Image (cartoon, rainbow, N blue to C red; front, side):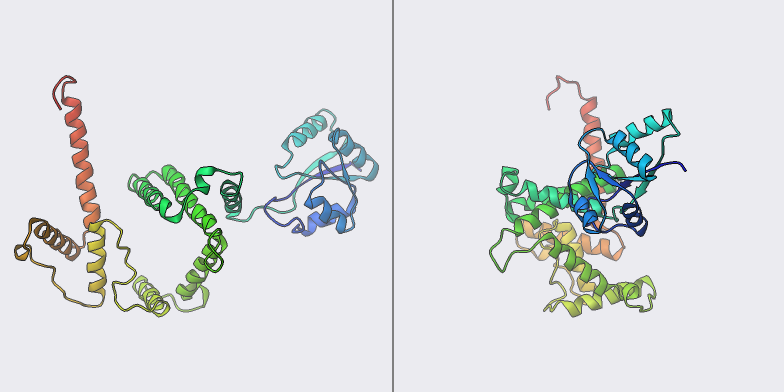
Length: 330
């Protein structure tokens, strides 16, 4: 019978004892070796298996253990011990009769596991001994960065650049993680954590999607949107349909949002007439608001329309610059 060496790989992001039934069977059935003491070696010992720590010569130690007992198990470290796997593979390629090498996953990362790494890295950066700049920030000092990162993600979407979008969303996530880490330092009674952020989001998504989580009929997209708004109104006691609108968003988007909210409940409030305004700025503002209202009636996005026209103008400026001699006055 050919000897067997099992390289047991586990996720460092899950509790050490969360192993598959096959993994528990193999660690209980033969000698177990590891490169260092860890939470996993402790858990395996607690379950009744003997674990030996091999600082050097792991390849030969595994071959000897497999020859003596038929099967030997190596508890891989957090990085998977790829160097040992390569060394074993080369040895067995030269001497195939010594043992068979098997890779077994005792546990694996669930979707979103790298978010745990992101939280851990941010905690280190924002803790004593970490990054002084991050530790010096406040929610208010970071506000502009959050807005900037969101705009950069928007630019990536507009450019259909999914690679750039992945990177920019990472920068947005960095802002979320940093805000959450700073909130842990707030006074007692005001502090919260990234788990509070995630938990609140999960609860909201479950409440507002009963057609997914509570077995209700989905209906049409319009019915789903209407149900979302109904649940949202029940959750938040608001005096006006305009409550909750982000007033710091660009003025063009703000105007479109306010007109949309008013239209949802059938309010026919006409925008002010430009000619009735007493100063040039007010007349301009009223004219712009009327333009936004007209765009809404036509089913157009005024923010996107102005952005498109502005970017086209910017390209025309660049073209003119390239056509202008370097020594010409600018």
